Length: 311
Image (cartoon, rainbow, N blue to C red; front, side):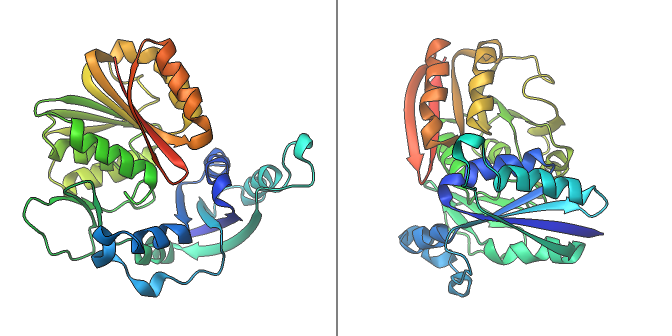
């Protein structure tokens, strides 16, 4: 099968906006290449063992977002949609754009293999190790290994939002907890929760590709008895109250779903959420406070924030 790769080269501040545009266009996969991520990792001693210095070569100083679309789709219409929103910004900002748009054609093997060179084992928190299923790793005492093959689904563990959510889970998940993962992507946070001792985790995503990939990763990690993945929109496939909800999506959706949290969280339950660009922290924080949630912590990493709140 052939795929069309649409590359948008932009600046880090526009990453969230452009990602949203590409997903609105129907992208089935999205890879983000940011040279700053590699610079940050080389400055982080905990990650030295995982860095492949041969990857420190980029032909673009900003961020490159690579979105993938089946060649059988109406590509001209999709490209027009993207260009109109990336290159032609709102009238009040006429003359500016979010970046440049580039098209490539790739086949299945190239699509599935090319991005793997950028994905190496990563340590998160005190003992969580996110390990690509195709990579070797010398396991150490107390390591909690998460085997992952993200395929076409968003969520490799390397993004700041995923990292902050995983760190929060490491400190907050208690043995026996029941948990919802809203917008599960590749299933990484659900698997982390299960391996940290949760008794039951329900992973939900609106994208069927994410559910397929999550189920594969759930099997790879041997947590099928704990984690079940369902296709659904936010809470429309669940009814029980749980101990903790984690949601790594986007700020506007998070702010809109806050009003429903009381229905699905037990008293004193915890809400961990990210996918929040720094400029949108107040939007989510205010929505939580308006619905009587206590803000326990706001974590920041790079251009992103993670909010931890309690009912």
